[in-house]
Length: 183
Ligand code: SF4
Image 1 (spheres, rainbow, N blue to C red):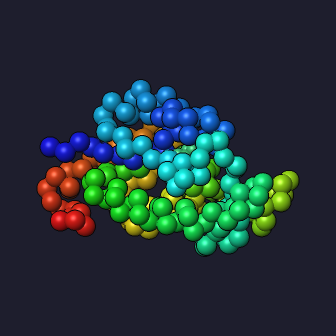
Image 2 (cartoon, helix red, strand yellow):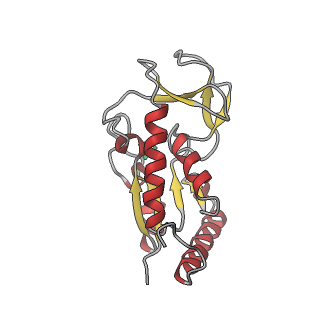
C-alpha cells in the first residue's frame, strides 16, 4: 500500500525557510496529524531559488493575475515563481498526493485572503485579497485535491473533514480510480 502522502508548507513543520530564517512550526500538524500522514515538505520561495534570508514579497495588481514583487527592490519574481510552481506540481502529481496543508497569508502558499496591494510602496494599505501564486497553480492543476491552511485546521471539525477527504483520495488512488499522468 502506498503511504498517505500530503504536501505541507515546510515552515509549518519547523523548517527554517522563512524570509528571516525562522519557521512557523505548527504543533497540531507535527504532533497529531503527522502521525497518520507521510508529509511532503515544500517551500516555494526557497525551492524557486530566492534564498534564506531574502527580502519579503507581496502580491501586487489584480486578484485574477497578481504579480509577486520584492518589497525593497521591487524586483518582479512572478515568472520565476510560476515556472517553478508549474514544474513542481507536475512532479508532485507523480507522488500521488492526497492533500496539501498551506501556510495562511503567504504570497506564495496562501490559499485565500492574501493581502493584495496596488504598489510595493511601504506603508500602503492592501486594497483587496488574492491567492498565493503556488497555491493557485496547485488548485488549478489539482481541482479535486483537498486543500486547507493551518488556521482552518484549528477547527477540529474542519480537520476531521480534511482527513476524511485525504483518506478518500488515497483509497481512490489505491483502487486506480484516479489516474496519475504518468500511468
Ligand atoms: S509560507 Fe511557503 S514560501 Fe513562505 S516560508 Fe513557508 S513554505 Fe516557504
